[in-house]
Image 1 (spheres, rainbow, N blue to C red):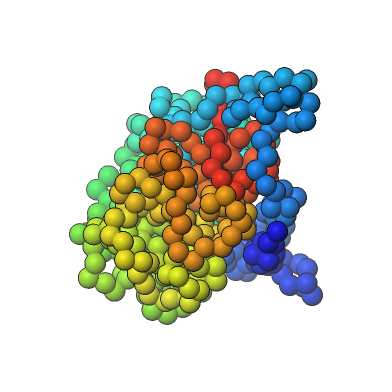
Image 2: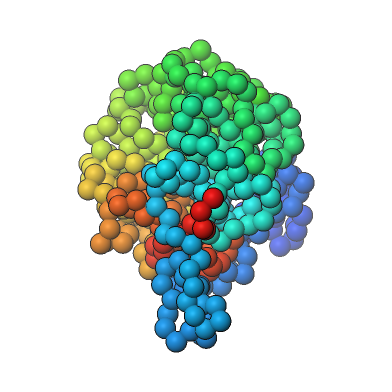
Amino acid sequence: MKTTALLGVAALIAGCEASSPSPLPVDAGADVGPDVVLDAGETLDVLDAALDEAAPDVAPADAACSTACGECEACRGGRCESIGAAASGRFVTTGWSHSLTIDGARRLWAWGDNGTGQLGVGDLLSRRVGTPVSGGGEWRLVAAGSRHSCGIRTDGSLWCWGVNVHGQLGVGDTLDRNAPTRVGDASDWTEVTCGGLHTCATREGGTLWCWGANPAGQLGLGDATGDRSTPQRVGTELGWRGIAAKGRFNCGMLGAGSLWCWGDNSDGQLGVGDRTDRRAPTPIASARVWAAVGPSPLHACAVTSAGELFCWGSNDYGQLGTGGRTPSLTPVRSGSDSDWISVASGFQHTCGLRRDGRLRCWGDGAAGQLGTGDLTLREVPTLVMSEATFTSVAAGIGHTCALETAGRVRCWGDGGRGQLGDGGNRARSSPTGSCLAAGP
């Protein structure tokens, strides 16, 4: 069983070598990479027992049942009993170790790690199946960061919850929230994305706003000093769309389809040809028209309007999808296909959707996050669940979730914190159906 990649992730997450056991505090720059070095110097134990074991697929049932229990069932007292309904919906997203979905009735559900209230369910208890987010309401869009989440309701209001030590909830203070809290009184929010310790969003007309931590200039305000606890306008440009954040940087499209990135650039993840941080949105030099972008903490991938896939930044595990492990400071073409429509990046893995709905993943597979049925690293896009088609995909630090065309939510990879939503806490190397607890 391969654990080399997992150990490498553990070292980076902990922010230390064997001779230096104390992790660096976030404000000193230790949130480089996965942004899971926490605010008081503690570390998020992403490689908990389940992930360390790289456990094979095991249904949430025990030997007392004479037959294997099905999806959304668990063996209790010798009988298979329901643990909830099959999760289906219109949208799914992932944080580092938690997941959220919006169902067909526009209700919001969450599962996984909840140590700082990032599930928004009104307490700090983690969940292994989807649980209704507090406050009800109808939701249009939701995003997740390392340990916080934000969503936009159908009335255009913006709400955030979870850890808030850097003001990333945008509510004017640094107090954590375990239930959705409204951000200001505006009702014209259109998009929102959550980085590791910051948040960015757009409003009608395409104005861009960011708030939270800013050590690498990820707020795009022209400086790299001082947190912001309320939304701050970024520049004067109009027409921002498709914004996406991960770790300590962001990318987004502007105007006719130019691609801009800003913030941390220690691994060339901004795609601008060097490793110098940018404190304001900076264009990627290209005549291409860009349609979608999916950043990770250390690399990024994007799709052009012609369906071409390009990636750049770190490539230690083949996450650029080029067939090798050579990093790149500028966008490099991943294969020759021209039918890509979207892309999502985790820590050191990437997944993308093709026009026919087929899903492919590549990069680090040590936790099963590629969904290929094994723990093997892939340097080129590899088909996932050949019998199914999908409409969207999202990637966490060591797990992935996707929405089937029929609406079924499936997740795979690290499940140690319940982030797969299948009722268990084991890693899965193949897509497994997520479940929703009995109604809100």
